[in-house]
Image (cartoon, helix red, strand yellow):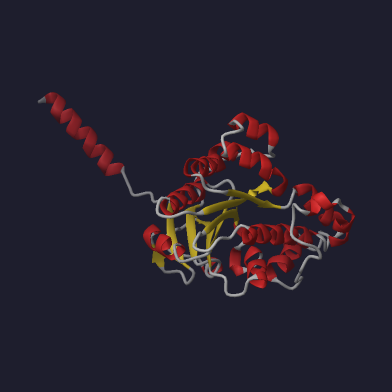
Length: 283
């Protein structure tokens, strides 16, 4: 009887001090609360899904995996990511085909430092299901060249290097808010070539998505939220090349209060993941 009373007291204390601590809340573009099931149903209707993440956010990475599994367990899908540069496609293909070990992939591809925790599960899933995983990003060295010397520097690179990016010349609209705001965020201290470096990433990711798009096979793409927020960036390049393409967008934001979508975060995407700003980070 004494042990029972002790246990009852412990449970009562825990219950008394416990509280609900939701880690995230999903919203529509207009700020209406929604749920994973509705987001999944909407994404099933799309040709391309742009999943905008915060690179160090565990909730975003978890939902990426859950959405990918939910889609991929019902139908064939194609996966692709900003986190793989196009010249690493051969190594990625070798791993997916079982010809290269995880250690070999790490040695032959420029993997991000959070690859083991955040992106390896997606790549492993693609391998298990025999789904293509596309390296969509321009090699960073060429984006760095553009940041210093503008689009013109790409005319000086080899023919092979040009296969690892969008076709030249690069379409570019400097008035798009996604590029215009980059300079504003730097307080006028940045070069006008910085948004161009962002643009070659966006254009390359859009190009490789379209190159591997198949009828009836959704392409789910993982990228930093800035690369797809406000229906610009990658989205702009996709629609420029293929007007009418069906694109579903997801963004990630953090807020102190996740019960209501803040005004500044409305309209960023079809679905917006609001994560508690105190959530731990993966790096």
